[in-house]
Length: 371
Image (cartoon, one colour):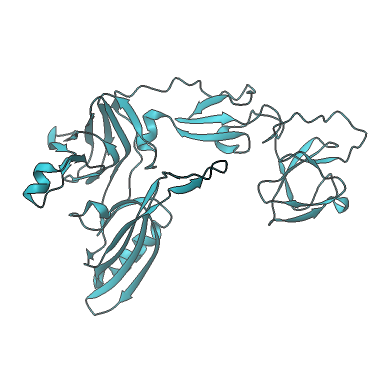
């Protein structure tokens, strides 16, 4: 069993074009639905003026200076008790031209007893009437659309894929790594060349086919269709100052890659037989209310593993420390190298360690992949 924390990657070279979406500029206000790029991600503006609003609120009528409007659904709440939802309900106070965000647990709020210049259980939304805020820190103004195509295979998200007409080529400069992974790949084959820069020694230069056929019998081999593997794992001798060159060779004229993950392995122990490997399918059965017909809407899939590992007693504390250090941090897990179904990029939900004998501890890991 191995755990591999992955390094942050930046392209050294690549044939993937940059996204041509305009860069966000903090000196401009943007109209609703405008899309801008910032730090390799795309963001869409919700609204030019009001936050999360689908109407233009007339705040020039000061006949009732204490009017409070719940922006989420345009409900005037200056004289009633209404349900407010944490981090969702926004109120606007005309008198001080200020937005407030509800910050407590879901509850009814009686606004007749509120000091509307400083309502309790609410926090001020700075610059709430503007879209000058940086998209990375303004989720109420900008919708996060994810990474641009070029960076989707580096974004630590398996569900998004870099897609290219033709082969995907890239190189990276790294140091002190010994594992390289590809997840959610659509490719005929993958070329990997790794060179130690200072000595110009080639550490790895290999073509890995992604094509596979279900064998086991002559019948299966000759009559089953070829399939394409979606995961690839390769080891390399650890070294300093390494140049990794990859080429993801297209099927037909299209190549796709969900994640390139590179890192240095941490040994946890020997995975025992009895491992549980499965998936969690997020597909849904939906019904057409007009006709009564039902159909299946295919969703994404999350891999799951439940493993038991024999940990040498002298490594027990180290393994516990490593797992604790990487709690809630996505890493690569290899349950058993001969089973690709145990290659997971994700997190553990829980681990338990039983110090069972003077020489061995039993570690159980409950793993799930990211989508």
